[in-house]
Length: 173
Figure 1 (cartoon, helix red, strand yellow):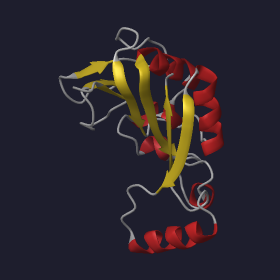
Figure 2 (figure 1 turned 135 degrees about the vertical axis):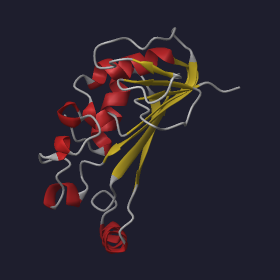
Figure 3 (figure 1 turned 60 degrees about the vertical axis):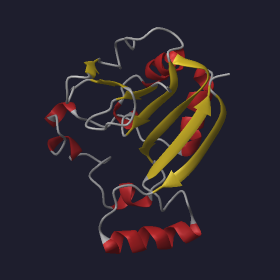
């Protein structure tokens, strides 16, 4: 059976093992991943997964080194984070221009510290040792029909400007 670690899992049930600063259920291990080592031995997981976490990290390379440490040789990492090139983060959103923390699940503790492009993420993953790094753009949690049409239209001209998130994957050789 494949072992999958979901880092910063929130309410997500994807994976076999879970860590989060704010455990939402008994099987989630509490860990402040910006400061603490992941509570697992080296080379433990076939996949390390994280969604909507990277932009909240104060110490992203520490966290990535820990993710690398617990990934098995031949295992993979998959990160999903806000796309720093997404045009509407810069025009309309409070997500990255202040004000988001009052809407977050954990109040003022839930902040954004970074906004990354696909190339930033490739650099980060490469720096800690991941190889065969690939990325793609996606739209996540877009329910408003007008937004869907606008994002799709922008995507025809520029994938990086018209998608809300970047998905980046790499392997540990």
